[in-house]
Image (cartoon, rainbow, N blue to C red; front, side, top):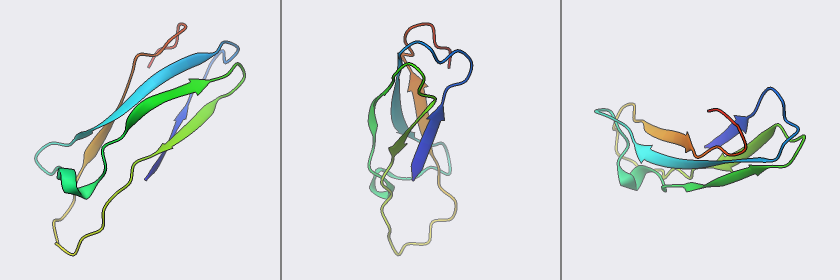
Length: 81
């Protein structure tokens, strides 16, 4: 799954934001259903979007809907999440 992080407003300053995945709630994916991902996205002055990918794992078990969460944190240089 590919996620796009878009910043709006004044994009004139360089900014960084961290991302990380966590398992969802009662209908959550198991750790075997996706590869945990974390890192940081660095926006240069003028850049407005960045992407990152979370690798899912196919299996043959019917499990219904499953969820995992992507959390953004640690925004720098005045950015607000």
